[in-house]
Image (cartoon, rainbow, N blue to C red; front, side, top):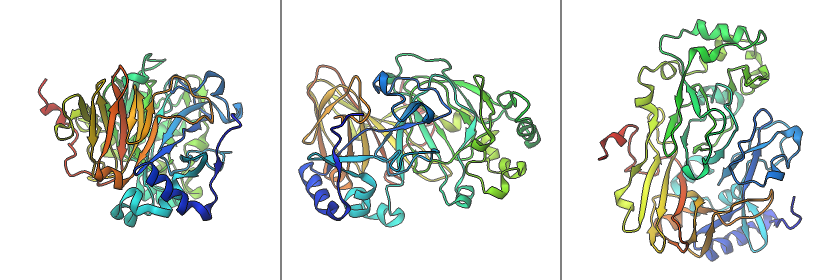
Length: 420
């Protein structure tokens, strides 16, 4: 780990440092990479971390397969570091948690309405990158997550072509359950947890993953993400329950099924199954209701630049998170205006955003600061931020937004209305 990491900013000075950082950055904050390992997964090695650093937190912690963006949400790993999953802002050789910055100046950073309702930046996004598939699992709905003092987690997927030069081992994702599946069928899978493969994938359906598209995954819906590197905007929670016991020969302990289940329900199979949104899992029109294809936003596109919706639609009738992809051609620039704050990550090219340089790294050492990630505050977003491509290839950035930001967000399926 590099020895030149900036020192944390002491809490009592944060208000002054934050004001200086926002004023100097024109409402933007430079963010450092936040790396997260998973002990039960195998890194896909496409998120630009240096090959020597995938086990920088220790082999016992597992390989690093995730990078979290503009995160104020802790990764709920066992034996985690105190700040695991949390993003740091960098300013003049010092750093401070984005979480603390929002607590200090929430109105300025995320907007008065969002801060008043949630008292935090309630979403995050990440790159999720594995060599093969992960277990068929779900994220609890709010009513079940509350029983362990947590929040439910719907999420969305987008598969950036720039980060998917190879498919890795299994570019397919099982989602939901085959229509006609009964709860008794699923119960038998749980009963067979220690008898070899519990057979849950026999009750599901795999969908081939396509670069440049994505999916909406509501809370309570089973899914076994495949091996494309995935950009995942989601609610600010790290709850989950693994329903598959063996993946590629690796055993998944029961503890990962009931990690976020009340202790008195750890052997209650009926309760474990009731956490699922059954109707959404056995939906006969799953693709129609959940598949996402980019939609050009003509209102925010112009000569030399194209802004596309990549993650959109509602989960249970609620606009919980959304994301867009901005592509700026060489030599072009635009003034980006959004109705709310966003977390930005550069995935191709070089240029500037406001006064800050943007550069897509080839390789990142663990602990290294980069020039690819920015938090665009609410005040900067509504005022407008100039972005310019100063390189000789397209400048491409992904940005995600918090809840209830957009009045013009498309619905799932609206991509069918686009002209081919």
